[in-house]
Image (cartoon, rainbow, N blue to C red):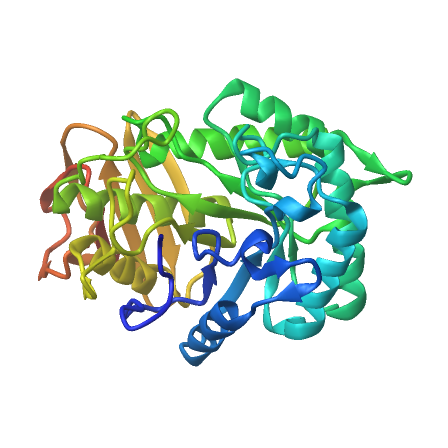
Length: 368
């Protein structure tokens, strides 16, 4: 179980928290028909708000007593009684209103999470969206999060967004798209970027024009999500965190939720360890500082050398890294300083040659 809140809440600039792994699903809150235990969710919401981090609750899974197959071991993944679904969504949104954002279901294009069809999930989505928008119009309704690494998962996503409910596209019911762009086990942030671009093509083909959020991201995840993954070395963890946020910013992805700020089985990166910020967490804080207060960075790649430029007016940051290998780069005449994701920095002069590898560095340049 992952705790996005509590005594170990990261000492980092965090604007929102995703409660996907916080054990606050429908089947854990509605303990008997019509009886709800909100103690845990109340505590999480209060703690997150105290840190000025907006919570996003995930509304699925199905309680066994609301399933058409109550005795099934996978009852939580089944289509619920729709009257019970309406009642649950209404109870939650009337309790929390605009304090939360509301996501419909976790990864329904994984068999263990959803045994129904894309059309049935679209129907649940439209029902929930209608209720939430009526009761809490300033809350964000987030579509079910979809994984992307397999072709079959992308096909499911395409079928979902192609669905109409009562003659209206399902996209009309939500305010944001949620993606889980975990690459294959040996994949990189650059591979995750490819998956997001593929998902955006699906959305464009279906006429969906909504903000895209990365609902979960981490690395080293085996097929099937088996446990026992060995964490990356700290320097590699820091590098992939930095590259993830830089690439997402360059694409204009508005939110990126990390799966497992703390130790979490089955993933290779942790941003905090026993309540202490790791080098990966420090890299997140550093990259946040590079990006905050500037426009969307302009990113490009040439021969595996990635460059993201952030123009802050009083200075420009030219952030460089390689996906693999190393490369010598001559800095511009306007360069004055180099900053690393570990917080180290030094003065440089125009024409100096630096070595770039998988760990992003920012070259500080004066305005021309």
